Length: 631
Image 1 (tube, rainbow, N blue to C red):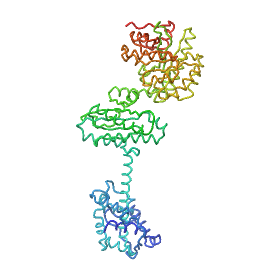
Image 2 (cartoon, rainbow, N blue to C red):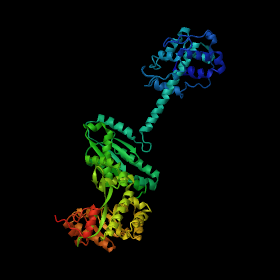
Image 3 (cartoon, rainbow, N blue to C red):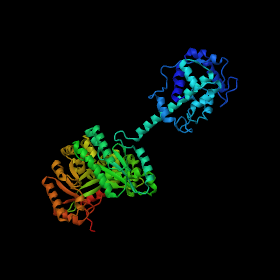
Image 4 (cartoon, one colour):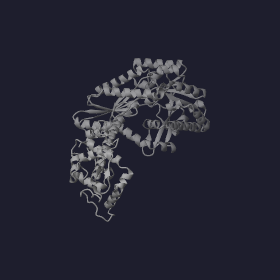
């Protein structure tokens, strides 16, 4: 008898046959009660021992049996499209040590379709719950054989509406339970397979998910341990801005383009994934840094083609962090560690701006661990006054007189001592606390100016640095007015420095803020001028009071003829536009002389004075001048 027939016998016909009246007339309900009592030992009769066979029929025998009426719609159909057909195909041709074709434990008693003695007998009959359905029909025939019945006979009697003995009914119940359990297991397996597929594949890009990527990497490296490999983490620069400005549909298309570009640049043995948001990862065979950079440039080129075709302004930059390891490395199996180390390099690439590929070195890990240690103290630094203002003088190079100063922040960390802003300011930027830091330092500047004025010291303009995040907040200038008024400081003594990169990022907002600040009497400075690629355009767009030339001007062979021509013309152009020029980063007498020769007489740098605490700078203000280094 085929399994589809067993299903028809044991499910639809069996379940659909018994009405409440027929079951009661046949003594079925009474029998269930007696079976339960027997299994619990409360009936006073001996319990059916496991493996002793089915409970005996009652005195009525076959005459007291049950009539079955064929169901019009059996629960399990033998048709090609029925669930049992798939179940039989997928699960039955397996070894005997599987339970219904599944590597899983046998079903609990509730799946067996009977209670008490029936459940114990079923487990014994099926070899302790570990056998499959191999030869199942023959086994049932052997049990029924004492009455001369077979499952084939039972099937024919069901279709004819015949009567059945108690033993036959029990076997039918057992069969229905086992088949139901098997179909249940099969459906769960299919669901699990589908869910696993969803979990392993990113629905947007079609790439592997991070967890699947790590599994595939570990397996691949196990096989290819003789080659050098690299783990790369990719990040799309300013992806959030693209999402916000052009919509999620455009952002999704960008992610899909990046995923496709990445996939198209891999060989069959290389692996890639979308980790989360706009971050991707890849495991590639490492054939040298130049070859790796070439592949990354090709990916960026594909994305640039898409950007141009989509009429998006600007350009798309990709940051890449790379960790390279040899095939014999002990860390080859620790994919998560490799991803973490590539992540350190990725953070370093982000700090460098634009499209960058950075290979991991140990210093990056140390910086990252330092950042992790410092992050927990951000709130305490603000609350406990650990952030303090320092001042670096601005000097008239002709007389060495102090003509102003720049306010700089220092962190007096309770365990790590004095920290420079390059170490901790990126943390405040990421946490969103940079706004509080800027206003905290600005308030300390106002407090220091008030103290010096009360002490009879002649004060000069102090410039303060502000994050680009302030430009997007209309209340920025109002907040500065409020703080300055609290300390009764004239606005003309306060200068707002905005970096060139900040202005280029959002020129419209920067221009609005500069005009607003100037109308309120504050001075404005374009900081780091010349560090980017659009410096001349800034001079035309923004009417600031001061242009501060970036220290990079002095690092580019300032003694060369071409460099001096560029510098001289920039200084002249600044003056012609009605702005003052000052150069930062002056470290030698030669640099100072070159600047003065080209008409720049204001400077700031270590040659004249290093940054110092407010108390020391107050003493210097009393003198009114600096004494340049003689060495």
